[in-house]
Image 1 (cartoon, rainbow, N blue to C red):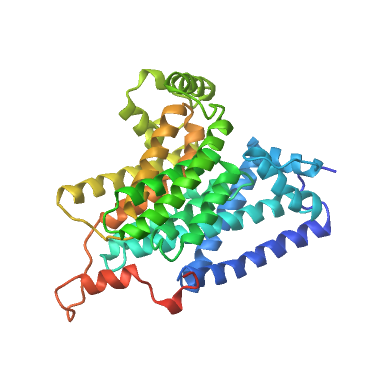
Image 2: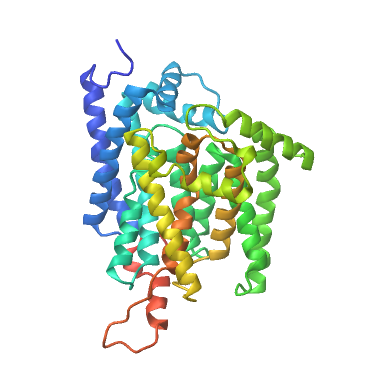
Length: 405
């Protein structure tokens, strides 16, 4: 019997259907938690699920890491370690213990990625609340980018890291009341990608140090907590990456050269050593472009990159015009996280196929920052010509619409 056959027994068929139904309840209750209307939450669930079925078909036809995770989980007896082993360890519960099929197990991970998508959508709706409908439509198109749902719906680190990123972004909008959610986001990222979790806590510590509007007492308390977490997590992340906690500049340079050489394989690889740092950043986030697409999937990914370019262009134009946008959340933390993560990944990843997956750990946060700057808040004709009440209503969503404090 083929272990990847999702229809070889009645239980595998029924269990996959049960996971789908469970996802509907997740859409309802998680949607309430993020203040998302039920119709929109169900629409996003249907979209993410449809992309999941496409991803499963693609994995079975072309091979994917998701298949390896599932096969390892079927064997069982896996020791928990951060990274790849952590995903296999978690997958054992569904593949080996509950005997879910490859499709059923994938639908479980799809549900995790969907929660991250809901968090991203809720954040972008806040960033564009009160703005022109075209700006709000742009935010919706951003959430519906196929690449986001494709990589966050398969068995693997991407679904968990995307969930972590979504929760982190939502928590950063009201960190004083959602600090527990930030802790959960860091814990999830620590499980699958410790080096990114290290960047999270470093960015958090840095934001408290430089943010002047935070009362000095709270700045010392939260900054000290984030710094203490950095002391624990960063050395662990360095050991995980192979650098070692006592690495110096020479070790770092050698590590970057090694990572460039290791990832410079396959038909989608590029020569990072011949590029300047700005070109490396551009290549990581925006390539492949449509003229570089070598397949239908490559063309879809390139169109996602075109939208990213459009957002950056509009954000830069609004910056030139002097528009501050919606002052939501801890933007210092967001910018630090985006810039550090983008730089680290761009200088160590020479394979565009890898970048297509891993950039969704920070690109949605960049999208939020750009969309919050694009456009102006449009006041009703009867409203006072002062935007403060509208901005305050955006920064403090109605309590009855959100279960998350």
